[in-house]
Image 1 (cartoon, rainbow, N blue to C red):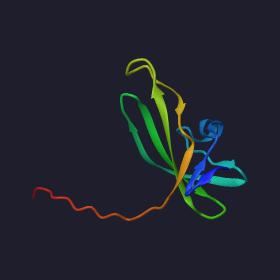
Image 2: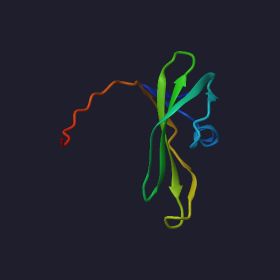
Image 3: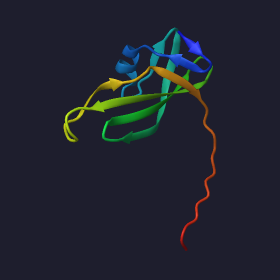
Image 4: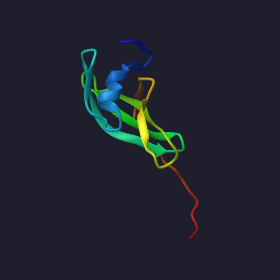
Length: 104
């Protein structure tokens, strides 16, 4: 397992087989990663994007990973295989207060 700071490099076959657009639990390098949620999901002209949050069972740390399904054809044709760099970054959930001006 290659680590730099708080980044774990996951092999592409695990990303393709377990993460994809499903966020399935998986094991890698003796560690179990439990899918928690999709924190972001969007689509544009290039493809569909999903940001998954995983919890590492051994120490309770959380990691995010971005996956993308590239679009093929034009607009309505569909999406092909995943495109991903396999990097899981350590994350933490923080509370954020947003103030907005609204018409009354």
